[in-house]
Image 1 (cartoon, rainbow, N blue to C red):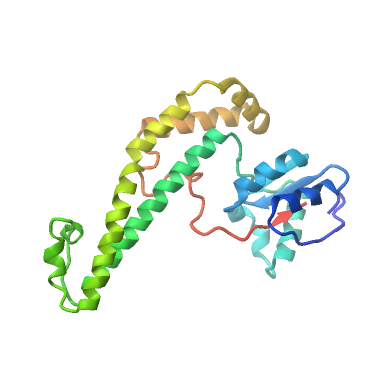
Image 2: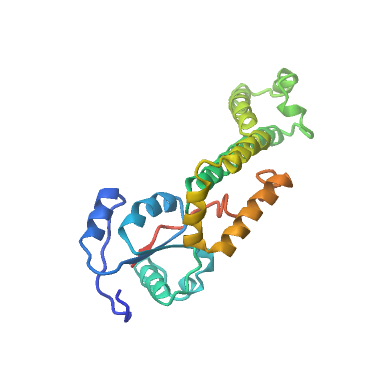
Length: 252
C-alpha cells in the first residue's frame, strides 16, 4: 500500500528468513512495515530492522479496527496497513538484547511453574476421580508417596499416578533452579553491567525518546527493588503479553 492508501501488491510468504529478505530487497522506495506481537515477533524484528525504514511491532489487543467486520489474514493485513499509514498503531518495544534476556527468563519461570501446577492438578484429579480425599499438600510429598499410592486399588490407575509423580520429580528441581530469587540475581547482573551502557542509552533514546527511556529504567529498578519482578501471580506485562499468541500478520 502506498502513501495515498492505494493497494499495490498482495502476496503470501513462507516463514523463512531468506524468502522474506529477498522479497523486501526486490521492493523500491521507502518501506514501512508492521506486524502484530506474537511468538515470532522478536525474530522477525531482528530480521526486518536492517532492511526497512520504519518498523512497528503493534499490540494486537489495542487494534480495535481489526475486531470489526469479517476476519481473515488478507482483510486484517489491509487494516494493519491502513493503521500504519495513519500512524494509529500502538507499538510494542523491541530493542536491546539485555531486556530480551530478562523477558526470556520471565517466560521460562512462568512456563515451568504452569507445568508443575498442571501435573499437581492432575495428581489430585486422579485421586478425586476414585473418591479418595486428598486435601492439603501431603499428596505431593515424596515422604508420604507410598502411603498415597497404596490407597489406589486399581493397578492401572496406580501406574498413572506413579508416572505423574515421576513428572513432578523431574519438574520440581528445574523450577527450583529458575525460582524468582535466582532470577533476580540475573536481573541485578543485567542492570549492573555497564559495559555497553552509553551505546544502549543512545540507541534507546533514538527509538523511545529520553522521557520514555527514563520511565522504563525507573520501572525496572523499582520492580527489582520492591521484590515484585517475577514473583507476583501476574508479573510485569512485557514479560508475558498473552498466553496464546495471535496469528502473525505483516503489513506494508
